[in-house]
Length: 62
Image (cartoon, rainbow, N blue to C red):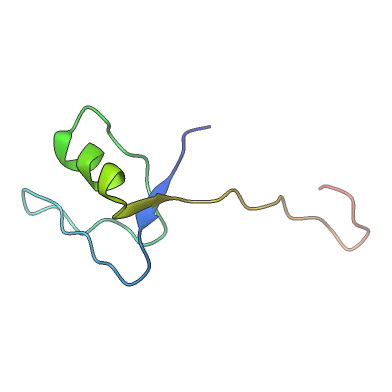
């Protein structure tokens, strides 16, 4: 699965070329883009931690 990155807490990441800001819920990084790679290296984008799968009331996976 592709890793998702989101802005560091309290940070808004504007995107070039009139694109919308980086989504708060995260999206994959294009490391071929110097701008996006620099955001990760600087710590402005952080990796989204995996969430555990939802289970039903019995505790078993659906």
